[in-house]
Image (cartoon, rainbow, N blue to C red):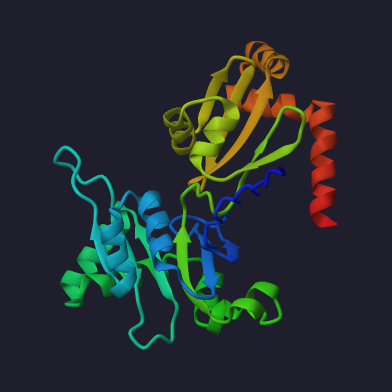
Length: 283
């Protein structure tokens, strides 16, 4: 008898969350955001799940916010307020895309003060504070339909109008960040968990490194992170490269980050790889 072989079931693909990404992370805070948008129908359950995980907000609360707009105030930690506001802005006419963002503690205080002295709802004050902190270039784009993106772009042509925009600053699985490796290659990871797994460290260690910068010793070298405008730039160096940097620290009295930078500039392998990467990006 012949045995009928069953084809293995393909794992279910998660719905696409973003198909438009605009990078403004090089601008000064608080406007250093990644504009993550969707041109197409919103899968609100998936959207709520991802944002809930990213911002540590219960999914039921996130569903409520994404359905009708509003604010989420983070609970106090040990009697102290440590986080600001999560905001979801929904245009009741449907003319403007849904928008979500987070205010830091300073922005939250500004919004509360503006609401009190101008006698306007806190949600409106939060929007005014957020928008005025964005780069002028992005402020202009927000005045245009679909951020002024070219309708001929594939993601725009297929999806239609933008349905929602998430202004994000987190190390998200939905856009990649690069890490320079000891051979000069650039490896992309999406999310703190994936980054931690790549380098064989804990998520807590990765989170601390991304937030505070500095170095983290590894068995075979070191991870170095420089935080500029709240954005981490990460490089990994092997044991030989780290040893050269330590020599520079001793002989020239350099800080570890300066020593690693000088070592990298004098490493022919790293410099060849960097020039090759720059040529690929420009050409």
